[in-house]
Image 1 (cartoon, rainbow, N blue to C red):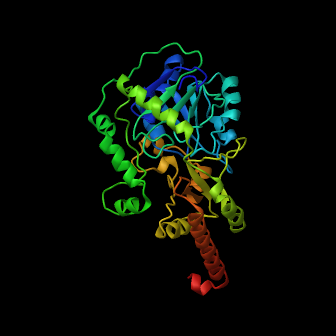
Image 2: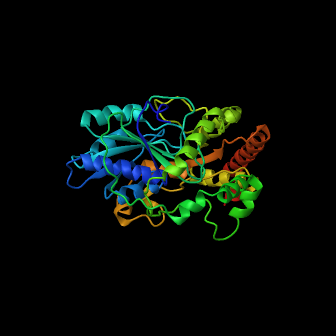
Image 3: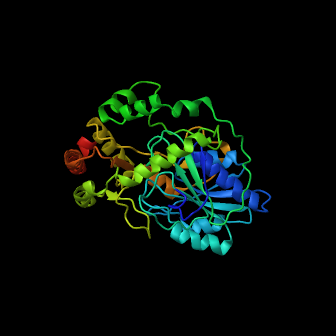
Length: 370
């Protein structure tokens, strides 16, 4: 694994969030800032906030770009200050993280760049311009081990002792078990997942802020398991975008377009297909139609980060973030895993055609729309 990442040192943690928290803590430890802050995107996983708070660093939200997945660079420049100890570049579902542009800005300002690659893991070695790289091996991630994460350190990085407790929790031991792996593999079957997610109290698909509870490094006994799984992952493709290519061409005429990251080649293996609907009502209608047919569509986070349920007040009071809100209103995702075939795409396309036809009927008949 270290050779794959240009011989950088790797530390394995209980989660990707824990790895991110340690990267943030390292950046803060090297800084002279009296009130350290970390830049994070205003649309994203609430675990970004959890990692900052665990590391005792203020999460400074910055709006995303009005089109494409990246920071709004004008907003980003205005939020940088002597207290900025790092900028986090998030790779959203494998479409890119904008690090090529961000690294120039960070180097000019002498600010570390953290590449949060929890949702992306290439099979071939690539250039990683960030100072730190964070990976996740949790549920639904490219390399899925149910839990765990990795921190790839800078090429030249003096050891900084972990400031976090090193206990390994009962939950971590459970997730390490074969029973947990069997349960997860069962849930990846669409019909089983649909039945289970319909049960009250399962929490599947919910987006809610949860404080980071454990940032311990993984015990040595699991290192070999992670490395072996990484090697197997590199040998076999699990996700594919090309199966959706023909549908995407036709959907663009209906105002449904793929979300991309400027300056980043289109990924052949995104974790999920990211689409932008014309507006929130259209997005919600499409997701409902897709899921009635069991196609596994998602609104993803569904809201800007400052509005995620139970997020701390220090985050909730930030904003407004109009671009992040617009992205949250329009974004939907579809699966790209190996069970998606031409029949799946054909079913999705038929639903889009039916949705578009209903839109045209309502536009021409105001009484029916009411």
